[in-house]
Amino acid sequence: MTEKRMSMSRKHNLKGLMLQVAKDLIEAEDILKVKEREEYMENSCPPLVLPHSKDELQELCRELFDKIDVKDEERYVLEHTANRVVHEVWDLNIKIVDLKGKFKKPPLKKVRMSADAMLQALLGSKHKVNMDLRANLKQVKKEVKEENAEVGDWRKNVEDKAGMGGRKKMFETDA
Image 1: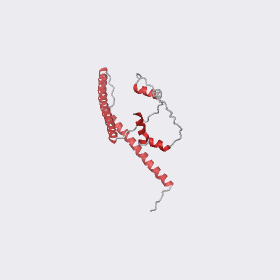
Image 2: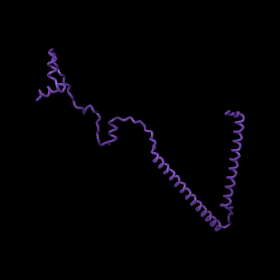
Image 3: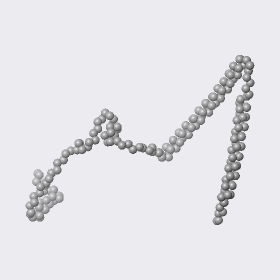
Image 4: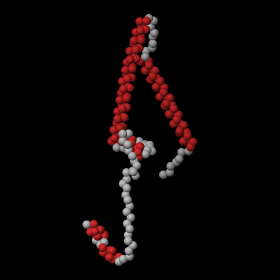
């Protein structure tokens, strides 16, 4: 198959046409929104006629207050339902993550702490912990064996230590 490539001028021309169509659609949508807003305002807010007497003015204020109260209740109900839906979506997302079993581990910072400070933080300040391990070690004395440098018959020495790797002779002499 041979694919024909579009020339750059044709691409720019098509892109310009698409942008023009999108601009016209956005402008038409904006005009429609303005008309809807004006219709809503005409229907819900009749033209204001100011009364001449004090009683009529108080009555107008009461009516406006009642209308504001109704609209405020509607706003509160809508806001409450929107918050409830947001929380439900959040809970469902948590359940989905739990079901998948994939948890993101938070990035942990490296903390430089001595072993003494770490144990004190874990066990609390009541416990005094000393991590000087060398102080608690048992002292072990090295025994230096002095072997006689006698030159003798090596076969006699082997026969004496024969059996259990030479240990038999050691046990016999201790008893």
